[in-house]
Image (cartoon, rainbow, N blue to C red; front, side, top):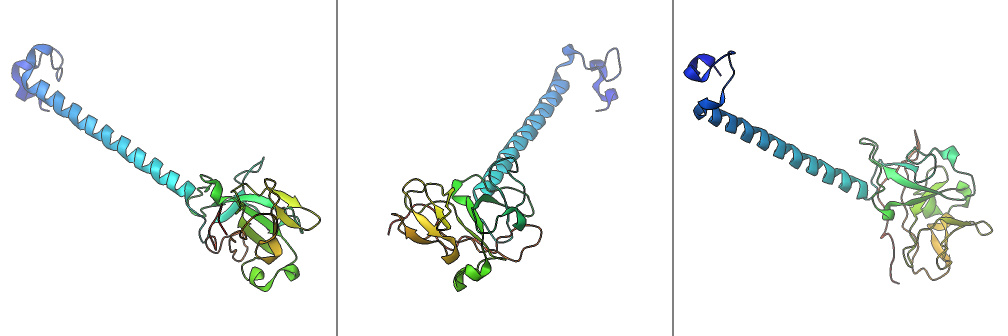
Length: 212
């Protein structure tokens, strides 16, 4: 704004608009305020959009290229390496992580994965086809009542649900071997291992509580 165009509105220091001058100066102040308000409103709206997008990413189901990270404990969020898994079990609970954005998909317990490392020779042919170096991955949510499958039955080397004692065979695509669970666990296919355990696609079936 050119001070020379304001005539008597400029008094004292050059560029200082004094209260008696209302008029154009007031209108300019209102315009500035409206522009600032519009800018702030847009900023808030964009922040909300970003927050919603981030939340959607956290609840999105596993997809091809996701890395598997520790779900809990001191190493939560760190990429799981094959050597982190003991041969023959027990399972390690994990969440998928977007390899590009590094967003961990822990916004839904339905994304929880049970990783087990077995001798490849012990796997059924169709299980071996979706495994990587003897490592298999399954939904860690029981198909009976949706309880988390966080226990391991050592004698039978099966995934064990403590809620109602359902057991699933990780060497045979998580087939139900005992208990009231109506269906096997959904498998998460794995790809070639390099820099971590990588999903080769999404879950092969429905996740969580199911009917027969």
